[in-house]
Image (cartoon, rainbow, N blue to C red; front, top):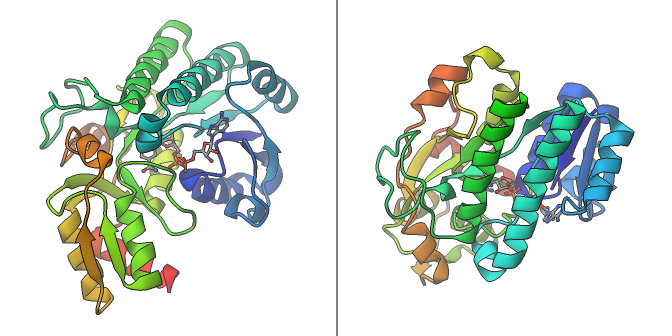
Length: 310
Ligand SMILES: NC(=O)c1ccc[n+]([C@@H]2O[C@H](COP(=O)([O-])OP(=O)(O)OC[C@H]3O[C@@H](n4cnc5c(N)ncnc54)[C@H](O)[C@@H]3O)[C@@H](O)[C@H]2O)c1
């Protein structure tokens, strides 16, 4: 059995489908606080259950009942929402990953847990951000991801827990709306281009961030989980990227495909978060250790997004 937490979110909506294709619908248990009827996860055919990852008893019972071979722990509170609810962000992100790792130690399952480029902060080199560098974040979300990375490495070294992680950049996808992150402007721009041909962007035109198209985000999770353990040199979390663009450059890509598309800029509190994150990430360690290689560039991503949203 493969157990997925936070499965109803942006990443889970696509990852569950891929896990079902691989392992069979009966062998995937997709859980979230609530699984919406008619949602991509509900339609995937996977078994579903409601599960709060801060509820130690419920998580322990799920592990005891289903004896998972692997847990994809996706439940979390993202960067922008985390600044509005830092208490909730701490509780869900810290409590969740600690419980999952502790159960992995006892029950022996493997863990995939995503970290984020939010582990970096204003003291981090913004261009070609190295794998090993300053992680000194300024958001509660970033703090929980740094702590999670440290815990993951601790459980791997001390208890031999097979936990694997990537620092996802902003993820762009069409099947589910983004869940309250600072890079949400990218998928939102496509949704609004199709809906109303205009978009007011919450970061300024020159804000440049690392990003990735969802099929590559799913591929990264599966490739890393397939990788030979002896090749993995990083047990905190791997830097990962596909491309970087500024908001203005993305708007140009959209305009080239949606004639008449209009963009305006009204930076809000998320600008301050974006300003502390890397612009371009060096993911050469992931490429060396488990042959990471994204399939989509910006143009192919934009074509595919707009085709699906048509
Ligand atoms: N989407 C991105 O751009 C991005 C980038 C970097 C890292 N990540 C990481 O990937 C993971 C998944 O992100 P996502 O984009 O799917 O986020 P999302 O917000 O779309 O989904 C997260 C899910 O977690 C669920 N959740 C919240 N509290 C919970 C709780 N107490 N118990 C169980 N479930 C709970 C939510 O209901 C939601 O469905 C997170 O760890 C996130 O930090 C995402």
